[in-house]
Length: 122
Image (cartoon, rainbow, N blue to C red; front, top):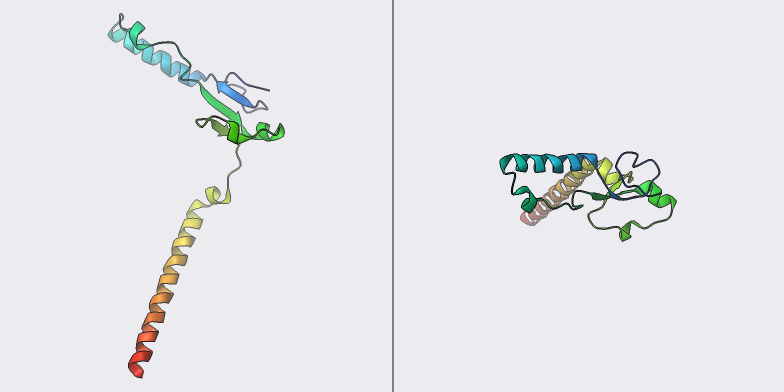
């Protein structure tokens, strides 16, 4: 139901604070590089903590168990979330909106020209 590690995550588990192999490897590489530079200062620089572990949750599993996304920590990563129409068609929507507003501006300018010509004719 809950996951501890990133392998196998997304196959039915809800999620949790996930230990990721990639981030743990990054952390160890940083520690190794610091050790090679100065072997005596590594104890001061690196305290073992879980800052490299992240909250990850599966949207589909949360829906299955009727859990609210609003209760999750702000920094949570949510996988399998359905994409909105705007996210799928962002370019089309943006171009359509810009075109629509440009056409409205064009119509307003034409109306002003027609109004000024009718005033000149009278």
